[in-house]
Image (tube, rainbow, N blue to C red; front, side, top):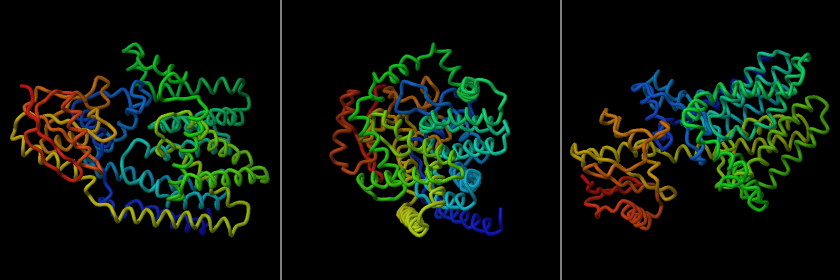
Length: 499
């Protein structure tokens, strides 16, 4: 590594550090997933809770993820006993990712490509936000980069240990479902490299399956134990999902094409900021065409570029199978691949035009990130504590429970930040866990003296309050609320319980 490259990398890392730590407390969030993770970390640390399954996904009937994410959060919280420290750990992972993707790009292509990949990764608004708060998808790029780094190092240095490390980190990236999009290409790439590294191996594709089962089994061992002790409740429903017999996966052409184009739009918009769906499709087509052209014309590293291109294209083709509401965080595993391709594009073509495109991407992302940071304050973090404080004052030491309704979810799923704030303020454990042990018990305790209904997060408060109250009253047949109060964007109603 030359002194010039070292200076460029240092400047890039410092820029990444600045964007991830500038006004850091103002962007902290204590939302549903954060509250749930802290509650589980507390139960693991202080009650010896053995967590066997991972975060809930939209496929509520299937234990799709291992519990690794919750144990990572628990480990950091155990060390520092601070919520801000957990978020800072994610910032640290994001900063380290900038360095790692440089070495990955250098390993695959050259130092220049690695620097471009690192720079665009460092300033990407999406990656900056991934490095500012704790959430399941936010560590996925870090582990994907590690996995790909060891995969290509195994190819270049013909060391089998790197292949094993790559496979371990790949399955560790299953903190969220997005890594499933990389699985098919990763399998064939791994098998090909396995044959290259260990030329004497016979049946490399079959042995790769065995290695996948071993490492996947290690990461998913807690889930397997949970499923085995309960006669595998997830399997039957999972088979129905894979056959397209549920609402989650569809093989119908109109639904499939809509899902693919929407996922493309969400991903491109997260990079170029404020583009419409037509513009995003044009950008995507031009980008794929340019990378394909370079892949055909280049003589060096053609295979590496082809592998990355297949990762990218096939992932989007697979995303179309998901028929529920698309979200860009389900594509978290694709960001490292995209920024590596950006670095590769600089190797060919008109350098002036490519420089301008990259400059525009960098400028748009930095401006948008800084504007967003300046417009935020601690409300997103303090809101749950403010509501919890008011509930404790009004309950006057009586037994109480809470139920949270949001415009898109009436199931009490989103009560976790309020329960965590209540537990922190009282020093007591006030809520039990569900039967899987990976979330709070969402059932309403009607035997409490007081019940607080939290109608939260709505732009049209007056109309939503009526829907919120009507749903709650019809579901639990309670009398009218005796009191109410409003804090931030939430209205809280106090009901007398049945006791």
